Image 1 (cartoon, helix red, strand yellow):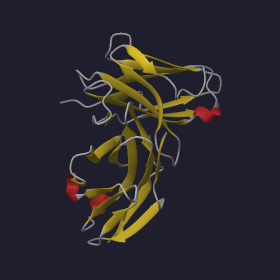
Image 2 (tube, one colour; image 1 turned 135 degrees about the vertical axis):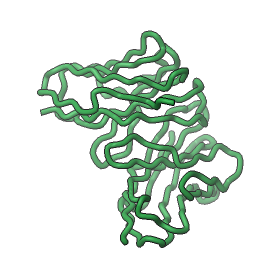
Image 3 (spheres, chains in turn blue, red; image 1 turned 30 degrees about the horizontal axis):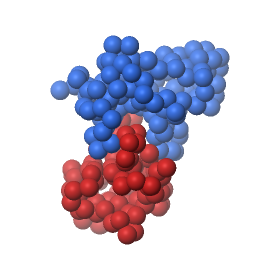
Image 4 (tube, chains in turn red, brown; image 1 turned 90 degrees about the vertical axis):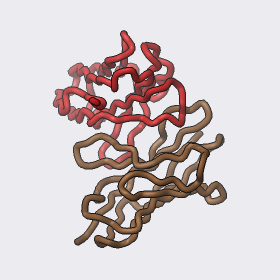
Length: 116
Length: 113
């Protein structure tokens, strides 16, 4: 079956612009995660949804970052007034169950955001 | 709090040689440990995971890892490297009520012909 998909794959934004990154998880997966991967680093947690509920947003770096999953499937990560330090690959992952730390997370290909 | 340290940001081996990628973790709760592989311009793919059953875990593509609590380690091994193994490898930890993954900085594996 289809895996996790993300769009766009590449996004170039001018400093100060708003961007929206989309994630389509595997159908039926309860949990959805967003991670940020800076160049040469491992992914870092941003936020977590269980169905439509955002249960953890402790990793969002500032109030310019906002995520939603209104119907419990597709999710959007929005970054307002982008800054150069926001340049990174944004990874989305989904897993079948909710709140299970042993559950496998399946990752999408990521969106590479470059802020000029 | 949880953390992962991957020793060696870059490991280079010859084709057919043993692959050993090191991972040490820190966790205040019993950990669950994962190894992911990332090929260029692709997402992360799970190689294997430890979830408190057998301490020796076998994964895809001939990889395996052993959980050693006394050493707080979860090193990844493969007896014989293939050219197709060249990629970046990430170790990650979760545990307790902490469902999010905490990753190490990654190890880039190069396989020389």
